[in-house]
Length: 118
Figure 1 (cartoon, rainbow, N blue to C red):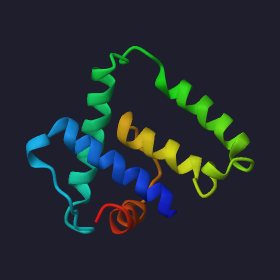
Figure 2 (tube, rainbow, N blue to C red):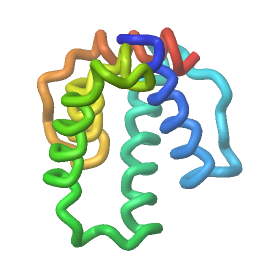
Figure 3 (cartoon, one colour):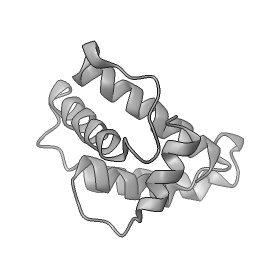
């Protein structure tokens, strides 16, 4: 996983903790022991954001797919997007925000926790 993507996930994890369990914020996660906890926190954070912004009825899947398609079109031209795999972002959204079973191996979550979550 690219370093920038790991940082995005670490930020999402921190925001999820603050939004859903502010009294139990952790600053470190163990790669092997805390994977399930990190996944639960990311899911809870997505659910919280949907409720907080009252967007339960909006079809976010299509909106995000369109945004990611557009972002990939300009990614090569914009330095801000270099190094980001938008496919990984969309897969993560589907996994953590829609609870969809996606073909993501535990090794990808391991790398996230190793690089950005610990």
